[in-house]
Image (cartoon, rainbow, N blue to C red; front, side):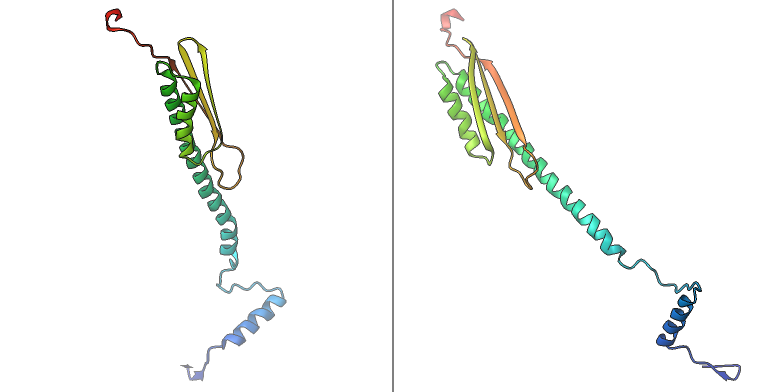
Length: 157
């Protein structure tokens, strides 16, 4: 390239880098126009990926807790239905609730059937939700209570 009769060649990349390095060694501020954010995206990923993974696993854990809560509630209701029948007993109520719990992935199941009065039955079901990453104990408890059904002859209704 010729400028006013003088021949001018652009500096080579190596020469430009040497010139910038010597200026930096002398303490002269060099604005290269190149971003100095090298490694920032790696840092962002190193911080954000564990946070995102924690959020995803926490959402799975909450959904498992919610599911276990529904299963335990249904088991308590089924146990109550069996215990409310005329002639129903604690064993029938317990087995009806256990049948529901056996179809789920709950752990540490406990079924308590009580007849506090002659006409009342209470079924308490507790279980632990499955754990995704070993975070704590996610205990679920449901209580169903109702009156025992009695056969009343048609002429006494």
